Image (cartoon, rainbow, N blue to C red; front, side):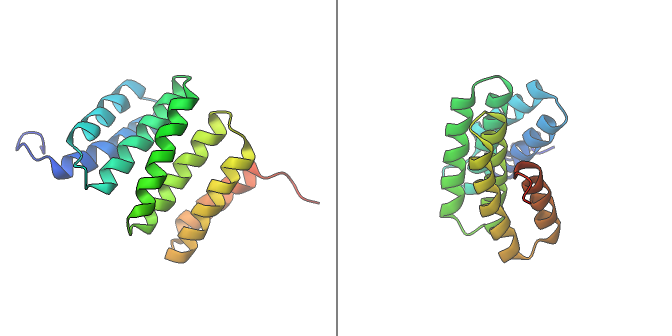
Length: 146
């Protein structure tokens, strides 16, 4: 519908979110298509869309076996998100970075650090659902302590 009326600003955000959803469903080609739409339409000052397409593409690079490219895009996304005032966007970009670090073979220690940073942001925001989700991921990554 947004494409039919030639709407660009919201469409870049929706396409980025859709890319993530399609990735999570294992529909990687469609996710790549939507990430490309988001990248093409995202304005330079549209931090949300700029972060979202980068994190979607980063995960696609990991899936395709290119962890270096994935890490680079994820790092860019985290840096961009840190410039804005969107606490949840910063935290979500850190969650994606943790995925890239873990699945890309960069180590559980680095992924844990990103998750802890995200957890702190979610706690600051009071986002209980994301706090619980992040703690579960931390428990899976952190070694068992006696």
